[in-house]
Length: 298
Ligand SMILES: [Zn+2]
Image (cartoon, rainbow, N blue to C red; front, top):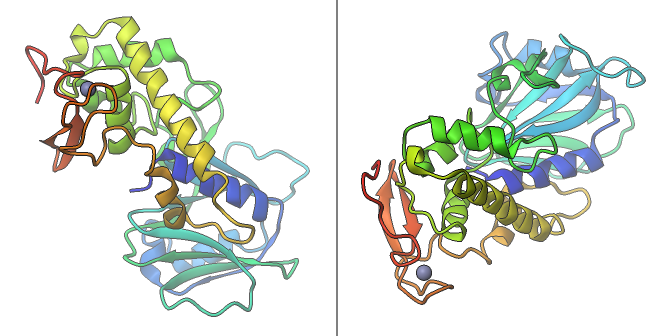
């Protein structure tokens, strides 16, 4: 799954290249790509065609494009948005409209201005697109209905560190499970959870009820820092006319301290990094900097 910085790179690319443009026509080449749009491919295409992409928005790892009839007026409750599910392999490409057809192309939008078109490509079609009305979110703003329960992420200007720490301490689970719970704090995936826990010197199974407020603040601040750093690298990696979530991901791997570094020396103390099985994936941590706690939630 793409992590938050990768999704933000895609959002910025969409903001630069397609926001403000009016969709002339939408072609759905693979019905699986719109399977989450209950009313079907023809309805999906109808609802997007003729509308202007008013904004590219993100909450956590969820990404959507607001659709407006008139860009002079801000979108309001009940207006539509195209929600993008990037899945494991979904890519948004902005390419000249006569560019070679991709073998795996699953859908495309053409614009009134005859400029580059927006293509959605997905090798494994786990991802897809769907149109949903915008609904008011707790704490303000408008979100597509399927995203309405998703909490703010640590990079959101309106994110409340104290509220998020309180939410985590109420969970009564292991700290890493709480960090991955998108209803408590969104946008933190497996990679950045491990990185943030290493920076805060906390073991992944630390019971949240024993976490101090200072430790809670430290791990969330660390998560924001590592994602900011990744974004600073990845944000410069995409080219004009090319928005590609997977192509950008390689730029994020270089500066990781623990994730994927099993048996390599801890960058702080030199102890070999350990890998533990975790929810069908792995957790990477330093046995010395992040000792296993008593009463661990495994
Ligand atoms: Zn260490």
